[in-house]
Amino acid sequence: MKKEIFYWDKPGKKNTDKTIDVALKRAHALKIKNIVIASCSGDTTKILLKKSKNVKIVSVSHQAGFYKPGKCEMSTKTKEFLRKKGVAVYTGTHFFGGFGRAIRLTFGGLEPEELAANTLRIFGEGVKVCIEITIMAIDAGLLPYNKEIIAIGGTGEGVDTALVCLPKHGKDFFSFEVREIICKPRIR
Image (cartoon, rainbow, N blue to C red; front, side, top):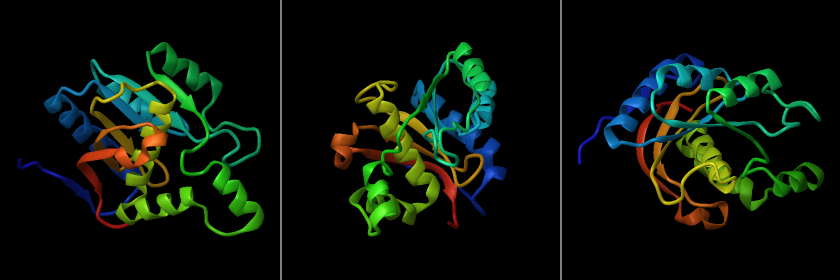
């Protein structure tokens, strides 16, 4: 099989439209109907929503308290808007940053979850984000089991990475499959 992979010059928000376009093109070619996207404010999800047709979207945001204790980054108004449009919005503990992160922040050291996250970052922040949000969404029951999905994530704001994945639950992390890289930045 021969497929095209897109590489962006640099990571970041400027790649959002192109990333969503190539991800949707690949979803259409593979007849994939489920897309999971990282979106803290909801802005990238709104862009995907405008451009997509006949796909189920799961929008995964940072956990509450990620930047400010007790606060969610996505406003209630945005969550309500997206849900009315049929988007499943999920906010929960990061798969690679739960209890292990609490231990590191309190006592120092490196926990297995963060070791896995940092290993995935070798391929780029967006690759790590795509895998993490996919596991979070499937563990929440928001993605179908044993069906290919498209995962869209990024570096900082916006999105710059898209993958075709066969997701597995967190407990089955080592069975997770990244089947295709659709796009990613060339530089971390």
